Length: 397
Ligand code: C5P
Image (cartoon, rainbow, N blue to C red):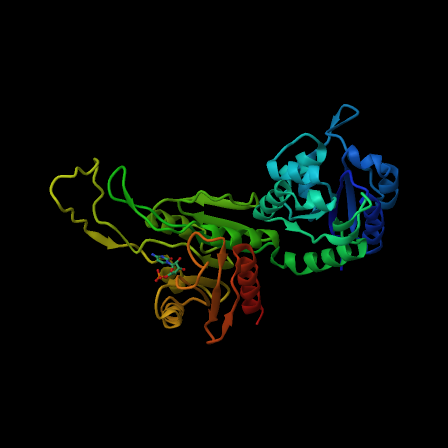
């Protein structure tokens, strides 16, 4: 299953480096191509000669080698997956904060492939708030963090923080590279965030959408090897580096940006909370507060999802969102049919911790065959995984 797969293994300074020696052996046995990067600290634990002998490739560790520059950009592009195993607390922190002081970091910052991280450290370091924050940041960037095991640690203590066993990591990679990267080469178009409809040069009509849900979906698609374009309304959220982001402000701008990518897209997910109405006239100067009332005349914005539903071909999958406050199911199904979507993701503002701004969401997915899938409340990152899985299942049926 791993035959010919290009794996860039990055080894950092942890006693678990010895397990990566076994991992390289297993990967080579499985006929993968392996290149190894080692940090200086990793070399205190295992010799580069061990890795170069097993991987049949020269081990890389310096940005400059005998006056030659190591092309970290091409190394990042060569890899189908970058696996950091063991990932020390120090390297995790540097990756989370974009520090570029060695070959591993430079390669990581220029890599466009999915990144998988297998942490290894003592339990107290693993549980520290700083490490937790760094791990959360890495997940936000769209990377996969492998679970740590419980057991004997280098300190002599027993607890959480052991790197996964080589066999477990191998199994994970086989699944990841066959399933996760099943979207390799597919083009995905996503809308996310609110839109701001200008009233005058300083004011607008907007809504509370943060863009988080759509951004998590974009990251999940990117992690599975797809080419993702995100049309993002005003949002302060960070977007994974592997996603092409087009920033827009108003519904009209979102409409124009969206349709310049629509025809070439295989899967389209419309998670944006697009304003339904926009001021008919935009005042050229700031409106003064004369009198006790101000009447704004609003006109309808174009419904991007409806238009996409009219235009879509049989090969495209179109997914809409419905954020409802009453008659949720009826309204969601109406949207599914009226807008000619294949799937509708419903989130209700009546559910605690669902919808705008929250880090969690609770959804029901309806498909046009009349089936529904109900999910528990969970972090938006995990909800994104459920949504992407549902889209793939729908596509494969
Ligand atoms: O009808 P409603 O606005 O509630 O439908 C929500 C769905 O339609 C979402 O997927 C949203 O992104 C999309 N939509 C759109 N253009 C609009 C309004 C909503 O694409 N003008």
